[in-house]
Image 1 (tube, helix red, strand yellow):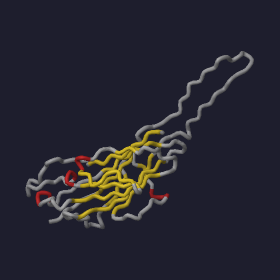
Image 2 (cartoon, rainbow, N blue to C red):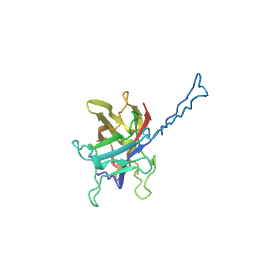
Image 3 (cartoon, rainbow, N blue to C red):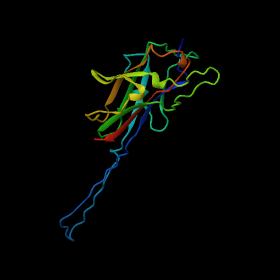
Image 4 (cartoon, rainbow, N blue to C red):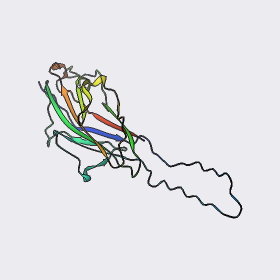
Length: 206
């Protein structure tokens, strides 16, 4: 029995909040003998998240030239080698490293991670074989941020969003180690099932 993860796997970053500078100016008294000019410049207060990732390794770190915008079209990691898809058998696992960078010029960011299936197919079956076509709900996820475990072998349907308690400073990034497991209890009803996995990062200014 084999498992085939076809096509592309998806890593996504979404700019959650676009932050603009606003100010309320008050004056107790301004005489008619002088003028007051005030200029508000918000050009250094844009809000931006960038992403990068690598499959099949626990040692990769993002170089400066690999960061991609992910808020319009998702950044994708290809898990196939040429025309051959990576095959997961029951009891096997896949290592992925995922990075999200606060590319804002000035603003710190509170970051939230949500893992999901971008194209869920539920209990849909292949009319030719009768097998299920959707693999996502059978997977287990472990996610670590350094020594901090965010999710520990959590079944995909039970995943919740994770928000970091500390803000990510301007120019800094998160680097997450992800282990995706296919339990050995998964039987032939899911033979040749596949899925995309989406890592959605949302940021708000700190």
